[in-house]
Amino acid sequence: MVIQVSKRAGGVEYAIRDVILKANEVEKKGKKILSLNIGDPGKYDFDTPYHIKESLKKAIDEGHNYYASSEGVKELREAIAEKEKRVNGVDIDAANVLTTTGISEGILFLTAAFLNPGDEILLPGPCYPPYIAYSKFFDGKPVTYRTIESKDWAPDVEDLEKKISKRTRVLVVINPNNPCGAVYSKSDLTKILDVAASHDLPVVVDEIYDGIVYDGAFQSTAALAKDVPIIGLNGFSKTYLMTGWRLGYMYMRDPKGKLASVWDGIQRLSRIRLCANTPEQWAAVNALRGPQDHISETVNKLRKRRDLSYKRLNEIPGISSAKPGGAFYIFPKIEAIKKWRSDAEFTTELLNETGVLVVNGSGFDPTYGKDHFRIVFLPQENVLNEAYDKIEEFMKRRA
Image 1 (spheres, rainbow, N blue to C red):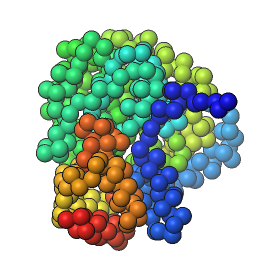
Image 2: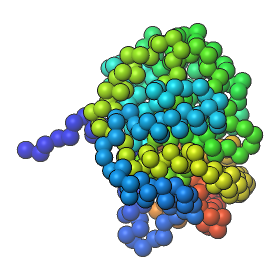
Image 3: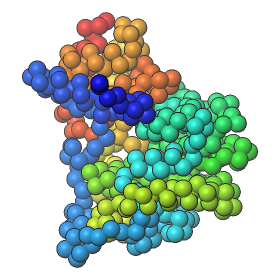
């Protein structure tokens, strides 16, 4: 008898990495792959700052090779609280900070702690896929609110409020946004917090790209919150170029103690998985307190690639795109989608014919992500231009 996988595990999808399976098959046939699918700076011409790497070596040599406490190394949690105050204007107590194995583990913890079967989580549409996948994994219901493409993917606060039901447990804000690169205005964030307050909802704020913003200053949602209970998610993968280290953090800001039970559940989950990587936590202290010069250098380099991508994509017949304000993603619309049955078919044909690997938009939300695709503009300009040339030729052949 064939033993079947559980419905829970068998239903998990993650479009960003699932497309690699197709790319591997195409590569076996001898076609060069131009990978524009995963937001990993370390795969391109970015590297973890030297002083952070040296700090990791030092931590290992000094013997920090033991299990840390489940909530994280005390010195790191204090450095995180300092960073949130200094950079984002958020007042938090280090006792309410928890280190995680990447931000993905934080998403797992919060969906597990918030959702009972049938409970709803309100997410921006489109959004980072693990929010949808983990919500379903724990038998919850992910509900996406509209973001407005013509307004550079700004949140539709009216639609957000309409989506709130008796089963809604928590509201999520991803800013800057993955996959759209949207950076939300202070006005929109204030409106979202007002809606959350009026419906007595806690807000999860995912600010992993807080240091990668191109036009104007970043406004933290948590810094604007007054009495609204907040759980913040952040980490070291993007701004600090430490993707493979898998180190993140989450924090609670809860003036009236409404999240005490949920936070206790999150801490319980942290204990059962033991701890995040100990020597990396010691190195991360120096990442936060040491030189920060690499951030502006990274942003300046990426701004040029953002501008190139925006220009080139909007010159391609049958493609259009809003301009991302942060992160390193652009989310073009397939204006000529009628030539394909779906955005997934579009990206598969593009891969098979050209070797350009992108992610289908419906993988980020079947409602608000469909008829789009996500491009990572981390590669150097010559690689991006080669990819855009191939996309342009591909679209002209379909004209």
